[in-house]
Length: 349
Image (cartoon, rainbow, N blue to C red; front, side, top):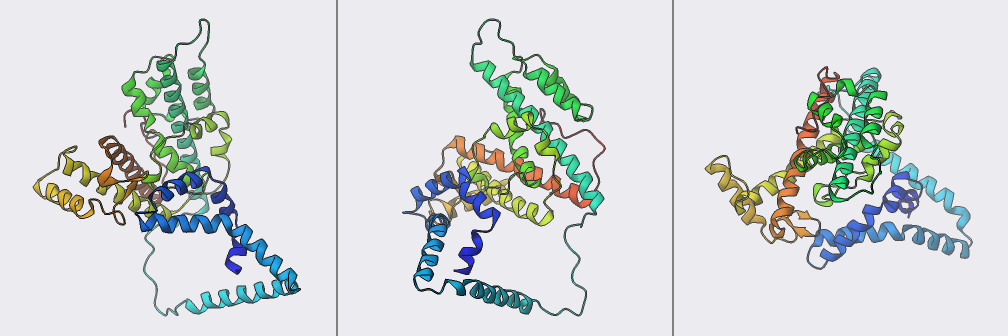
């Protein structure tokens, strides 16, 4: 019971419970629960998370009825002390130096400069994605006569106000200088993919506390870019920045999804393998996971081996973008040096 009560006082618990995506992911897991034991476990965890407040209230009611509720602080204190002692006892005594850490530890000054750099990257990606969203709207809608579009003017003012304009790649500046409504679909589609690095940057700066795997984040929400255009200080304020260990876990997860989707694409003929060895690897992986409800990766509520071509291609593209951006971010953190070259080009990626 102590662990359940402790949850109620953790910020991440309430963030997870009130997160809209948590409920949509629970629905997807529920749809797969009859055939996937992984989904059944997730449904069970979700049910426990939702019912935890009720369980705790019921337990308190029982204690109050038994007139032993005054013992609760003592019980919590004993449990906390035992858990602390267990952690201390679990630490092994080391008389020789440990291995060097994989990731370089940043100084306070390095962390501040790196966070400032990534925060400005957030604004660059957010502005360009918001412009792409505006261009998409103008392509699909006919505006009333006399209606003035101000997206370009707003975006340029924001980029210049926060010292981003002069550090942008030439291709990005040229794209942003084009009049409203003059982007073609090829440019729009390229820039829209900047949403994936934007999602990663939000997570790295702890604006978002949770990063779902690719299979649970196939759709874009343009509001996450719009909110930075409306309130740029949301990116610039704060001092939090994730370190190497968290980024490595995310990178490895992205690599797993990328390899699985590439193997499926090659086996179906969507992608060309580099050589015969690559083709054989893809066929073997695809055959080993084909239809395995408890083992194959999931895209939305469908196995990769059962997904349609569009979803396989889209997940491959997103996981490749996530993998490359996390690799680049890790190398940047380990070098601890803010790049002197222009910000990574969005419109030409």
